[in-house]
Length: 187
Image 1 (cartoon, rainbow, N blue to C red):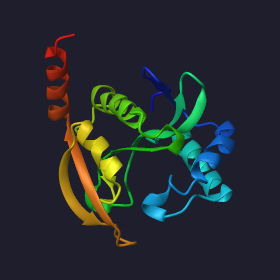
Image 2: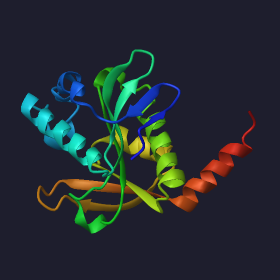
Image 3: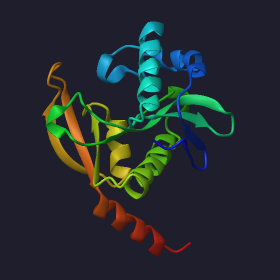
Image 4: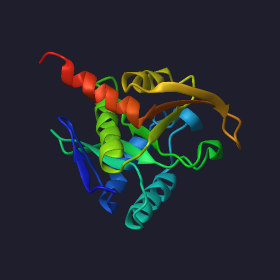
């Protein structure tokens, strides 16, 4: 896992125990975890989430990065790659995902961070394809996947909760073609 990625407005970096208080504030908001839980996280749930991410990154596993807004230095959530073990039918694969503070929704930050994450995944990690998974009711996440150039892969259900899930996918050749198309655009 890379130490950090920097975009125009974001710094995607490794997790730290100092992230607990701001992350708990973000995760406590019901909108943040509406999909899939329909409620915010308790302080204890956030602590378990963060401890798991720190432990996994220390072991060298791929986990989402802490996302900071560069101008303010404020933690705004997470963006990055992880393995979606909760959906065994897709494994082995890597998922690009995001979960941001509602105060920054609608500004293109998830798209910006996910684009940088995909570039890292394909060009640095050498991934062959990346998925993204969402509940169909979460229309905003679906729109981000389309903006990223991802294509519909399948509808499925969460194996334990039964929740409807939609999977989008982007292959390395599709990503490379998009990069070439972007270079052809007039400045």
